[in-house]
Image (cartoon, rainbow, N blue to C red; front, side, top):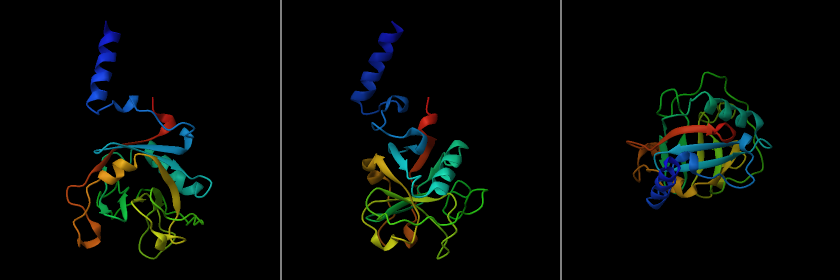
Length: 191
């Protein structure tokens, strides 16, 4: 009887488009030890971390995810047609970083195209990436060889597209009442 109720509840939730987080499937062939799952206020985003390109940066993101640093952190800077930035679990406004030292850049030849995930940094200082990252909405060739590529979205770009964006002409793309990363986990840690 309980099993039937659980099956009915799952089917009902699926019909409403609200499949429980634990029931959502991950892309086939995904290296779960090197992927993060971001459950947001708009839905789920899955990012394949590029340990082949940026091992230090990928490890930092996994470390912070495991510590819960990214939970309830806003997408504080979201610029339509460009990118969505998040990862400030210290001040929640884009001015903070983690308790760990900044990372040395790990630039690569990978082009900043739609779905690419890069590490944010402070100003023109290349070795200042820490905890913040951004997801590209569209091509951003001007960022090539200027920022570290740490991953790519392999599921959920439709969710990224739904994130609340800053109004046109707003200073720095700052979002009022932004969407959040509700929970961020390394895929292999999800039970």
